[in-house]
Image 1 (spheres, rainbow, N blue to C red):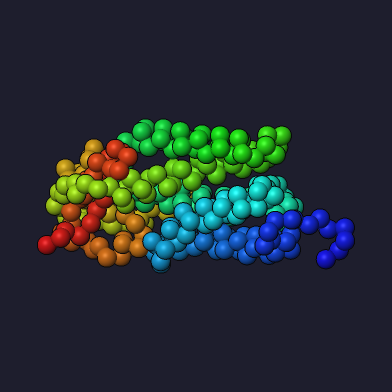
Image 2 (image 1 turned 30 degrees about the vertical axis):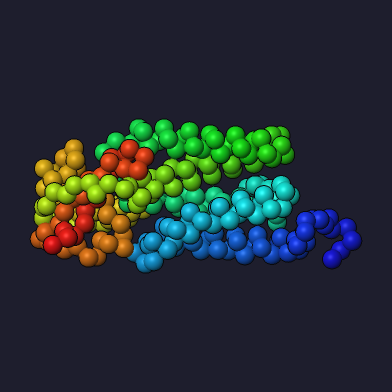
Length: 243
């Protein structure tokens, strides 16, 4: 190593090793982020789980190295920056939550996500003083916290809802892949059309997870499930009836 290159004196970690770890992490984050958005019909549960776990691993590494790493996101950022590793999966997680999940109202979910994001930001502000004078890194942490909290809390509300909820049987009238802005759109919704009376608030087009969309066909008998939510945010989804 060049004598002029600063070293990172952390037990078990040299600067060169940290740079290699972050370089690999950047590649993994880009792959997961792009896969989650562009190929959601394959390995859906796995990539969503990785979007949740990868930022946690990056933050654990930051704690392990005692604040040596940073969150610089500008062009030509430091090779010790975790910005890409935390931001891309968080944005992908929030994107999938916003596109795939259905909630009867979003006010409580958004408020909870903002409060959780504020708590995360406050922890960074307290334990990492170097952020206080860097607007770029402050912006990175704020974006990460908001996106990650929304995505993580939305999925937690649905996936970990302890209630069995209730079901209303109906029929698939139509199915479509809806693209915002037509062919130049940036968001893709996989949707099923059902009887409005079976869906909360008359929402006859209901979003479904991309990996499940192919299992539904026009004329299929399905059930619209409703749950109170782990966080008291009421959700609904289309599923094949148990019988």
